[in-house]
Image (tube, rainbow, N blue to C red; front, top):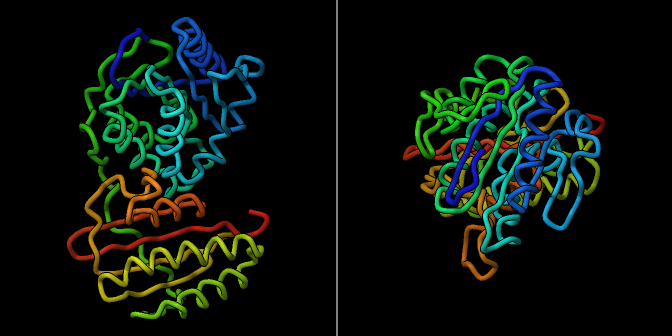
Length: 307
């Protein structure tokens, strides 16, 4: 690492506890040496290894990535808020957005997030270093890290350019393909100008899945936001199903979202529109969006009680 201005985004590939701790210690020491604000967001399972190395100070923020980045679309707005809190100075971020227990859907969204980081912050004075467990994660996940990070470090080696890097905002292969089909037993509901039926539909499925009252409310709000957007395009269809410990609601409409960062940047309070997708990402455990001229599919996941 070197001190300097501008944007930098690197993947730090580690194998084993020793390389992990060495990478974390190097970033902490460097940020302290240049007196830079540092945002650390790693899963609790690896964060425990750092022990007292992460000392909470006014210029250091530490988050459990399993909470902050359970839905990867929440990471960019959190980082922007951190940068805004330290306006006028360069900031450093140490993140670990992928871990072996992540689902295939979550890991696809991690790759999308990493690609969009290069768009979101390319004009800012920000250094983002992303830890990847090269021993525990699959080859496809590591390859996606190489696609989405301009710089790489393997096993503590100096940062070097990634030959596989695709460019700002370019998504790795497979990360923008149509979503897997809805379950055969998914219940559909078509809707038009009145979305009250959509709210009732979502609430019924949420209660049946065992979500508590607060989570039922969150789901109803999220579904209402997505369905409300669909009204601009003549309505749509909502489907719901409950596989393996989570409830999935999917809204399909004829609209096309042209901003790749939609829902990942918080709009100013006085902005006339653009708040809905941001809110959906804050409320839901995972949000998958696929969009194009033929229409948009938004799939939201809510884990059931005890999951």
